[in-house]
Length: 131
Image: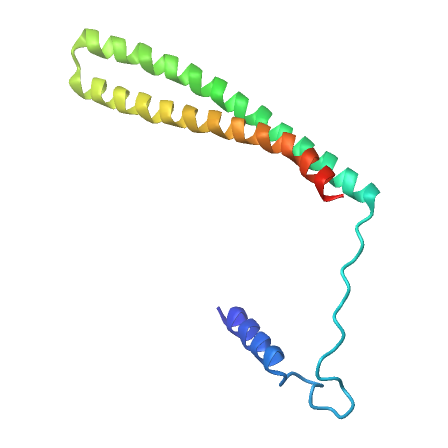
């Protein structure tokens, strides 16, 4: 918390011009703006490639998660059937709730996969438009 307060105070001092050196004679009140560094195309392509790899790895991991969730879902459905056969209402309610949560999780994972695939396609297209 102390660092945050000190950081905010330093920014306020710099913004107000009361920072060290601004009151010295001969220092410019408005320094020249710093030019943005030029992006090299070689580094840009490498960054784009690494970004695509990362997105593909995310998709792969999400697909693995969906497969594991489906296996868990099948196990829960089997447990539900045995609970229904035994007539255990508490287990039935618990298993149904777990099934609903897991189905919602699977839907979310599938939506993430779909979004990641769209992002992977867009990475190259957006870079081409910018150049």
